[in-house]
Length: 145
Image (cartoon, rainbow, N blue to C red; front, top):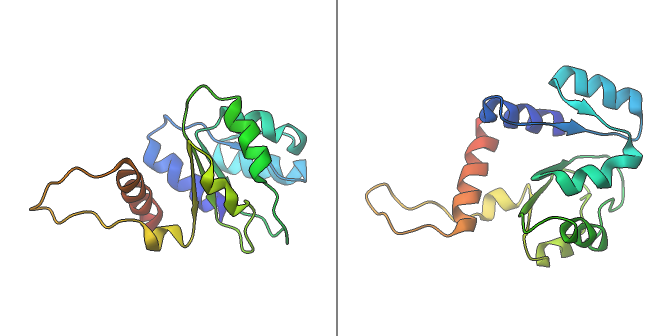
């Protein structure tokens, strides 16, 4: 699922997107990176790279949380006032739901797409909130793939 999401981002980004991938098994990481034209990093270095990312996509088969609120707070603290989007495609979830409460972090899950504000009809032009614009853009990209 993460591969599909990464492909969608790459397609939408027109070459301006840099994708970094990791997996607990570096061989799998390297294979995925090659298929995507991405950079492979060892799993042990993931947190450093998360601090540099604008979007983190996670989709594992792990039965428990792999990214806690405390870890995301540390990641956000090391960033310079840059928002962070985390897309958790895993079932069960990979990311602690308390991450939603961290300022500057937007956590999206499969249920997020169903609860995002619907854009206004084209004949009405009230300003959309930042969240509504973000959700609309991400929903369109997600549905297009």
